[in-house]
Length: 124
Picture 1: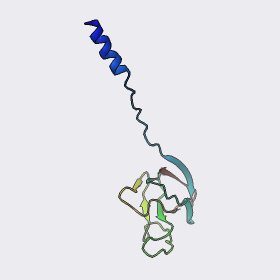
Picture 2: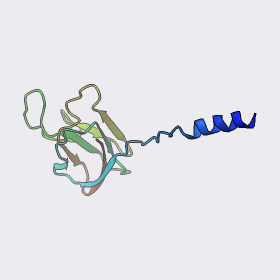
Picture 3: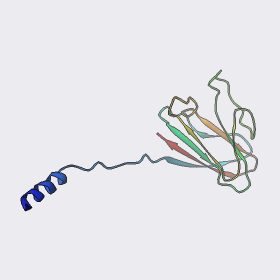
Picture 4: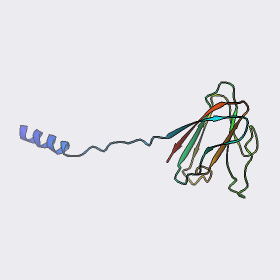
C-alpha cells in the first residue's frame, strides 16, 4: 500500500506547475498644465491604456493625437470634441482587444488648472 501511495506522490511531484505571470502595466506619471502636452507616444504593440486623474479639483482631458477617420490633428480641450474628460479622482480604460484603433496611437492631455498630475498605465 505504501508503494502505491509513494508512486502516486512521485507521479504528481514530477508534473511541473505552471506559474501564472500576470501582465503588469507600465506606469507613467505626467504633469499636465493648461496647454496641450504629449503624454504617450505611438506604440503599435499597446493592448490597453488607462488614464487616472488623482487630483481633488483638476479636470483633465485626454485625446488621441490624430483622428483615425481623416488623419487630422485633434485639438485637446476639456469637454471638447474628440476628448475624454476625466473628472477629479476618475479614470478611463481603453482596451485594444477587438481592434480599437485608438489604443496604440499617441495621446495628448490638457487640464483646466496648472500643474495637474496625471498617471498613464500602458499594457503591451
